Length: 411
Image (cartoon, rainbow, N blue to C red; front, side, top):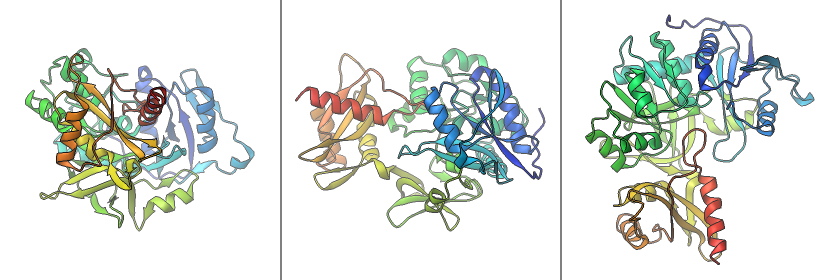
């Protein structure tokens, strides 16, 4: 495969793409054509989307065609979308994301932004020519697309799979892979062999310090990443921005990002675009700060702040403390509506040893000592596994609903 070359295009129709991992080679071909301008821009969608969700996505983003395993068909737009045929010439990929609000958003990414991100990532990792990538994340999310772009930039064929386990990793022969923390946890649990790996990017959700320490002790070359669809995926590695990327902070503490990796706007939503892109900077929904070494520390999402008893608690900070507590393999903290407190700080935990789950009083004490008494969880639910979103991230909304059900059932 030859490295891609960017060319000028004069018309950019948008084609939705619903292909499973088994059709990864076709997805790669469509992406390459979108990047070099020889084909339409693409809107990757989950091939398992139920019909109502697919209909909503097609109405929201107005592609002109839908590509599936069965072939390519035209998409009939509603009258209100008849004029929304094309995209700006530079747009190559539109990533569908609901964000934190549930409002459908189409993140428009240019070929130059995607290749700038891939090139900066490869330089930071020291990934050489001929080194292959294992793509085990969905290619309808930015993390999977980013792996494919890196492969196109280096002219190598990626190994595309529906997931990862020890056997898949060993058989891939790849030097680089991108995973979410849950996948890394499962690989460690089965003592998968990291031999031959040059880098393991870990992102998509916060990884606990204990998980990272365990992985590094076992020889895994892990690199934590921070980013989102609007930044072409990870743009801060191990707390340090990639070349060309700058990190700052909004007046309210939210992280701001600037640089060549930024998206160009939300598909057909100028209102959302103007709210998020300000003066060449993307204002994220995450809170953060720089530590003493100048590295970015992400406190958690601004919309995951729990208002309990009049005090604001960052769920991500509580998770960071609980994640280092004995007996905790994984943790998610959510706020649950409560008449007395406004919201209850509620912890969901996967126990390291199911026969010896962690004790709520001990977890409370750890949080009190590290943060504050108000940040200590008032409720604890131990689960064998967390419900996950297609991206591999914990489904916080499902956990919040489950907590409400359990609390109502207990009276």
